[in-house]
Length: 300
Image 1 (cartoon, rainbow, N blue to C red):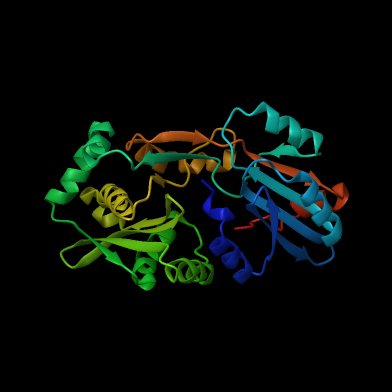
Image 2: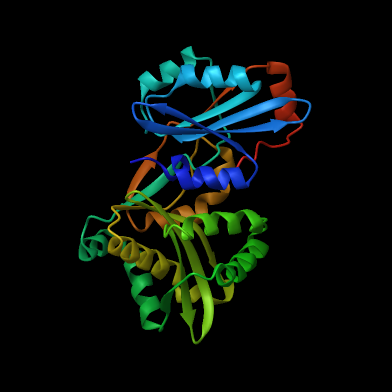
């Protein structure tokens, strides 16, 4: 299945963020690459979760035409793949320890029955889901992004990260207007205590953003939210739920993900480790300066 970062709606989202979008068609398949001009430098190019075979010649032609000085490719293929690694090296790409999107994740197989899914979970995870239900937590489906944002702001303040609310609003509008997104809110005693934002494309759902209130930690609402996300996705006929990222020892920036990695592993899905992130410098001097002075390539 094509990754969500390679779909038409994601391309529209990137355009809203100010990126140029080019669609390289190979073997009747869309391959979206995204470009942005950096004053005084030139253009950067990224191709997240791009499917095989990688369209090297088309990217090279585009890079020449657009004055690209730095390109980044993240193939949608799992480890090991010596053939693709060899092709990347031959095309001038080198591995890098900073990624655009999670390089390791957990995918839950929604083709299994609900009983099978529960049985496959770790004992503590099953207990947490049932404990949340016993405490009277209700999960409601919502189309109110602001309702989710109230929870997300509290989470961001607690964990010390910044929310690009305008970008998130654009993402939500684009996907929800096409019926490709939904929000779940965990409610206790008329109080919203946790929530998650789910995107979906083709037969895959993505647990894209999640939030919770610390003071209700003992209610185990995040466990119930993933369980209900699985049920909602199954109702839509989707085949898998991607939990969107866990700790990857190859990428030091993911060290801070160890806590929620333990949480996600409790659902016992398939751990998928992607090949990684690869860069090519068309102008090494400019690319080195760009990275060192970090205008941080925070491409999201």
